[in-house]
Length: 61
Image 1 (cartoon, rainbow, N blue to C red):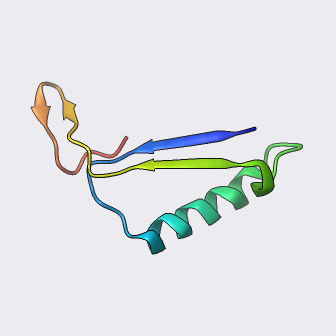
Image 2 (image 1 turned 90 degrees about the vertical axis):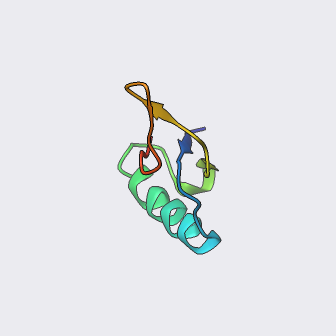
């Protein structure tokens, strides 16, 4: 089962999460034998992340 986990510094609306999840579901079909039916997607938004020793509010990982 494919699992895609995203950690972001910004807060995302439910609508944006749904859009991204759906698009990832389309993309996963490029891998033979994979489909959105078995895709698990996780969002962790609103996290404080540091890059190069500095807090970065716009950093997306």
